[in-house]
Length: 202
Image (cartoon, rainbow, N blue to C red; front, side, top):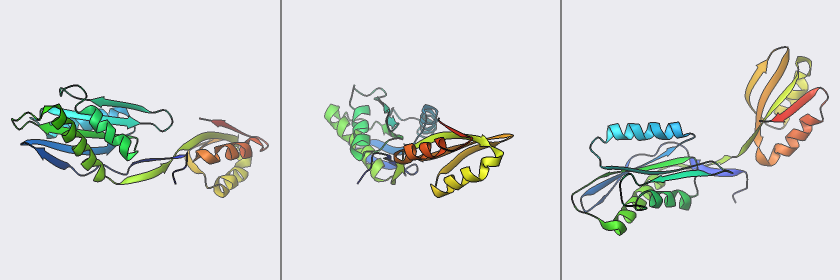
């Protein structure tokens, strides 16, 4: 059962897949992404790799609570490529994912229905070829304290199995921690109740 503080994504880029229809070739790729810069980078690499391809159609979705997404037909008839690709992202229930389908035109037009099927199938094959993993939605906090309180802070981090994301150790110490969303309120309250320790959400 999927809890409300997990999401599904893909573990790593998928292997290239090829779908053919009436001598048009559709190469499908799935990439895990975390920023629009990464998306641009993947598209640039594919454009160099498939020099001579006519269309680089894609869709992506990022985020867990606030979702952002985009579908791009890249010159194919409106909604015949990007949206069918995006539909597969939704039906596989994944996020932080980019799917690109590169088309080499084979000389025979497929018609809108044919294009929708081809892009949808290539996107589906790319996702079937990817390893889908479940990740937790984490909440980050900054915990600030004096060096003398280090032991009691570290004890809670260890007991509650919190992830240390970063730390600044100076006269005063600050540790950035991450915890699953469902445990965030408890973790916050434990540190909040500690003498000479402050916590703030990031």
